[in-house]
Image (tube, rainbow, N blue to C red; front, top):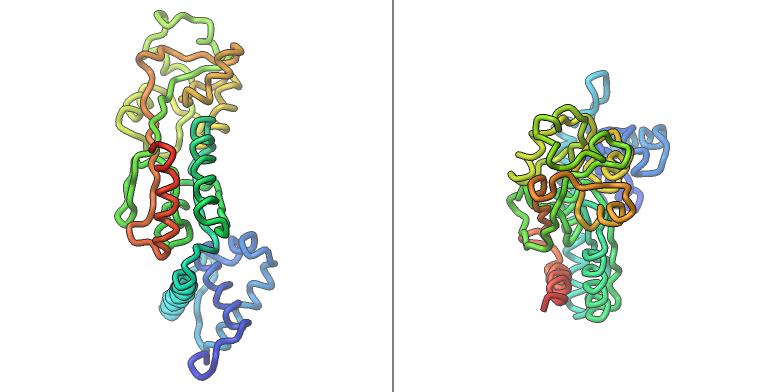
Length: 302
């Protein structure tokens, strides 16, 4: 039993394997995350259960499920990781120099204006804390929210249509989104005056697959969704195919408008604002890093 002795490095490894299995929702799903085989994960889990003298989970036709003991052990692992992170934070605070990783997440690919803004913010961060290791990644919205709440990320750039308790939202960008069609689409050569709302129902459209603001929802209800793509680059491919209508940001669509590969459909009517926010945890574990990141993104405006 762990309670009778010091935790070894191997014990900690087993506990982290168990945590990954739980958060991935099963052994098979954890293979990619851990980069080990299914048989190795099974062996690790058996070793952990033997060392603890507990049955942590059950697998069967009904899927993966934690036992009551497994739920308690998982909660204890989270507390252990919190204590470890708090220790690292305390040491960094004593040294008065920010160090370690600062993680920034984005929910979609950045257009040129946002790329430039983020580049200036990263320059500020490097000048203020040159030893900080900046990590930037692109993740789905739900994973970003979870990462922020679990203190696995410091800040994110994402839509704020669904604002969650425990997270703080600061307005960042508002980009117009327009209804587009590709050159091969039947509506491409029709003048806007001949395109009615009823006519749009006859053509397949791309849905973002997530909740958007009320103006956008009203416009989407006028279309016939037959494809789903949240990421703008994937949505762009579907629209360029000529098979689908769909909404794109002005900055992303503009180069294709200029070359005649895309067109806007009634842009004065079929558009809505795509609003993004800088999002942080309200009570982050490393407030100095979060404060630095927020100062960096506001520095450009100032």
